[in-house]
Length: 206
Length: 206
View (cartoon, rainbow over the protein chains, first blue to last red):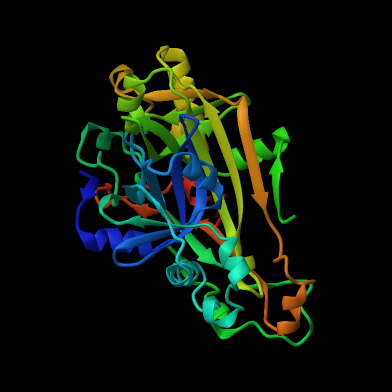
């Protein structure tokens, strides 16, 4: 099988650590709503920026949500259209999210989230003040009910009858790369790109 | 405003055309499930590969689903952590999906889907036979109830009090790029990468 459900904690941590954007599924008036939002993971907790989902959470505080993190690694180009597929790594987390209210945990959760998306910015930029903290909805989800799927490798039909077609088959990799930082046009002259930002240019994300 | 809800049909078409992977939100036993799947869009219909959602669709054939397509364009690095955000393009489509059963529409929908993810492969590879068609779950969703959000540009705090902090601020772009095709190790010698695949290497996806 090209695609494997994984249960190892190692796989979950790796998939979550490789990204910063998830798709959060919540119920709104009985209909699923899927919104992109940023997240950060600790050993046992997933922190999510929750503003887009806040209406649903207020209406249904005990409702289970689903958080899905997907990294697309490439296309699998097979001899037959039917065997075409996508190489990807995907983690799904289910749970009843907790709205983080304690100031200390909120700061720590936001630090985790910030550090995952933009390493170094938490220390470099001005950290949230009380008013900003209060205006931020942070959700916490236990990393208890999780599943990981990883699909990798070449197509499956290399040994089958379609191999005789003489068609090319293989993988077309897809890679997300950080680019060169673009200064804010409002930036005053003489302010250099900090090293922790400059160092990311050209590196692979995910 | 950095972030704008868009209503123009032009924006929807552009966001959908820029990708091939969506996150499909369906209800399973009353809980939202968010699964990645491939899609293809025509002027009025979104076709989705529906195998992962098929259990839910059989159980609740009249249920509304949400399909979200998100392209992450970069990080917005502001002077304050609070003003940090993500530049992205996102389309959300709501509707009751139709399971495509007619052979003609199923072939056409799969062609659209294949053409969007892997242009040229529909003509190059062996097309689905009747048995494969029957084994494929294809969903169709009308492009009626849609919303598009696009967030772009520099951070918002260039004119505010935080500008006096003298910190660097700007965007860190993120770009997904197709790589060099990797031949299937099972490939017989002498089969060249077809031009439509080779031409994608180094081009931007999304």
